[in-house]
Image (cartoon, rainbow, N blue to C red; front, side, top):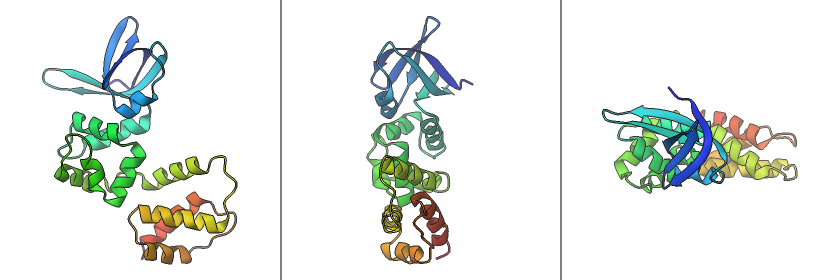
Amino acid sequence: MFAYIRGTLADIDENIVVVENNGIGYSVSSSMNTIRMLPNIGSEVKLNTKLIPKEDSLTLYGFYDKEELKMFELLLSVSGIGPKGALAILSSMTVSDIQFAVAGGDAKAFAAAPGVGKKTAERVIIDLKDKVDIIGAFEAKITSDLSGAKPATSNTVKEEVLEALVALGYSASNAARALDKMTITDSTTTEQLLSDTLKQMSFL
């Protein structure tokens, strides 16, 4: 119903952000990740929103970027996860953290969020395994890590992809075997090699 809200950041109280628009202060429930990204009070702000109705209330949830909003909606699709639990996860983990935890089957990472038990954490991994963009997450991380750095050699690219595959939960031996089958040149990028190797891993 509401795609976003734009206005003046009027107040922040725990996980509630108040955005004033045309003289009306809108109470928006947000994650700590979003709150950490907000400008100073009095500044203009835009939050991507989702309105969730209940029998006795309407609650507006807002996020600094669309990626976090999409992850919020994915978490809501998990059995046993409601808005409060989804916000708790997004307050203790970034979107990339969630993607990596799902890929690596790291239920402990989700269970560390307030109110999320072991069974619910395991359910998050099962339900989101085929929904999160793992390759995109690693590409974003690699791009961030390498920004401003000198071009990597073919050996360093291979090492970075090997580390990424191990972090995803693959054994070092299987990852190394897959990488040995890849054609790597000085022009091969880390993102390209990671994507190609993950495709190769699916055939091992």
